[in-house]
Image 1 (cartoon, rainbow, N blue to C red):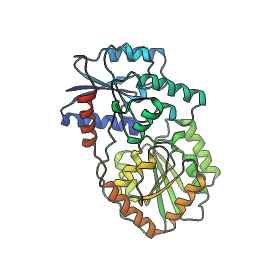
Image 2: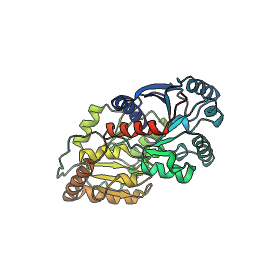
Image 3: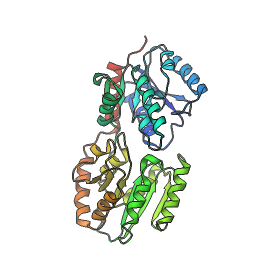
Length: 351
């Protein structure tokens, strides 16, 4: 079977969605699927008229014998007429709805949701990256449940991080610095814990939303935490492995997650978790592996972090539960198998 995976922008970008696409291209051949990448314009999810016209032409040129799967960053922003113009069945891969990105005006969010609902109505089938997203697509976007398949991201096995008693506790937050990731909430929470012995490293690109990154630096400085919080920017996999091996607690203040790959990476390493339960994150953090708090609640986040920072025995218990849960996570070959199965049954070709 042949597959064309259409993804906008830079496939090497250090985000979960692009990592998912790269992993599919790597692992689908073992499932009998010859997968190739089709690069779409980088303007999505805010394409101009030229982006839309170029995309429609690129999709229409996909060979008839190949299945076509379009990443949701582009698919959800395509007007219905551009999808119809392909003249072929098109399947969509959805990580989380575009209109649920933090920082949008109400008008822009509503427009994105309406546009994605119209686009999804034309999808031959939809592959969602979590059960939470699948339920959201069915309930909010009107996609019939039988048209949705779930293929959760893979989490390769990682070396276990041995719990340490402290006294210094190293916190690690992984994720691009954007409004949705809630880093200002994390800074506000940590400002109330200045009396405890901790440091935080944020590993995530700073150039995706430069204004957000600049505001975060200002907030850290205003809280007097410049010497305790490090913005590491984008890091290599080797650097991430080192940071994780040195960490004592993984923390996420994200306001919404379509899955939460940084959380499952923490589970695979056996790191205790403190996470905002926004979107799918509420289902990703298993009982006992850490503490979940309401998204956007700095006081609750501070209380949860303070409880684990101050109690090494509790951290050790959470670490054991985290590692136990991480051993049951799907790996990328499992993800590829789920996608391949859906493609064979649900993504028809034109020939």
